[in-house]
Structure formats: C-alpha cells, structure tokens
Amino acid sequence: MTSPFLHDNVEQSTGDLSPEARTFNWLLDSFTSSTAGVMEAIAVSSDGLLMAMSAIKDRSNAERLAAVVSGMTSLAGGAASWYALGGLNRVIVDMAEGYLLISSISSGSVLGVVADRTANLGTVAYEMTLFAGRAGGALSPRLIAELKNAVQQ
Image (cartoon, rainbow, N blue to C red):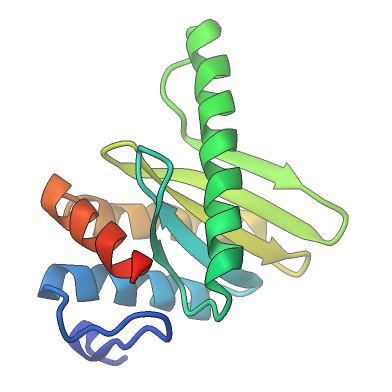
C-alpha cells in the first residue's frame, strides 16, 4: 500500500494540499481501486458541490455525477423526513448495467459510487461504510473548503 502523502490525483496537484486533504483523496482512490466492480467515486459537500473524485479522467463527468448525487440525496432526505424515518443511510439506484450508490460520510457530505453489475452490493456498501468511518471524522469545515477549492482548479 502506498503512502497517502504520495497520492497524486490526475486532475489536481497535491503540492499545495494539506496532509489531511491528500489522505482524503488517497482514501477515495484506494476505495475505488480496491473494491471490485466500482468504476468511480466522488465526494459531494452538503451544498451539492464536488469535493473530491477518484482518478476520474473526465472532470465534467464528475461534476454531472455530483449534481445527480446531490439531487438524489435531497430527494431521499426529504422522503426520510416526511415519513419520520431518520437520517439518510444509503440510496441505491439499480440500473440495467450497473448501480449508483450514495451514502452519508459526515457533516452533510455524501459519497457517490458508480459500480458495474459485477459488483457485490453488500461488499460495496460495507466498503462505503468503512470509507465514511475513516474519512468522515477528518471532515472539518476547513478541510471541506480546501477539497472543494482544489477540485475546482
């Protein structure tokens, strides 16, 4: 396993990122590359903006995915609130050729994951929960702002 401090996302230089931001990006890439069936993953802040992305080569695709994830999170949260079912745990969209999974990280931020049909949903959900446990505790307002600013460059 490589060090989180050596992470170098294709879309952003890590030279100006804090160790916490580099670690968050490394955890996201590690989750994506080591979870069978996962094609890409993004982190979206509570205001709906792209905060981090796995080594996706198409940033505009990541931005579109962030908009979808933000909208789905809002709709699911509204339904949970309307029926007094508590906070959002996970949203799963089952499509003909794959899945979109959305899970809470912390501070209103969410993880959006695109997986193909070979993915074991139980394993992906478990790995998403592990990611949230590892990365969520570090998500301070300062780190969220830093991540959002870095991904926009």
